[in-house]
Length: 97
Image (cartoon, rainbow, N blue to C red; front, side):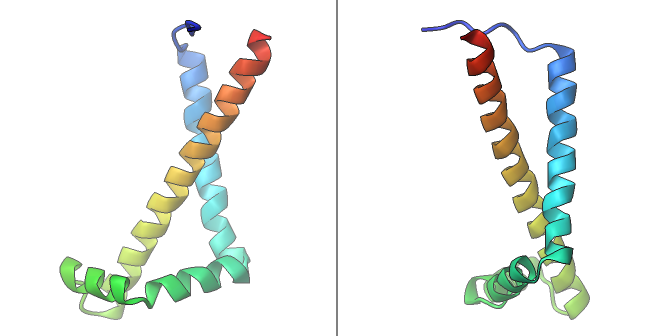
């Protein structure tokens, strides 16, 4: 079992900035990629989303749009966290060798 050194403030700030930048880039892909936008449209029209609209009380198009934007932001942020964590572990593994 290897012991990892405690994270430094610099490393934490760098990882946080990386998550923010990647989240923004992933969200921009929705704006500039017809493939990503089409996938979000297909998902937003499913029965699960319709039930979520009702559950959240999103009765009009504006409220539904807000719900979609929040979901997209959450998914993009979670994806960015995953990418940053994998990259961090790969960098740690390479620097330990």
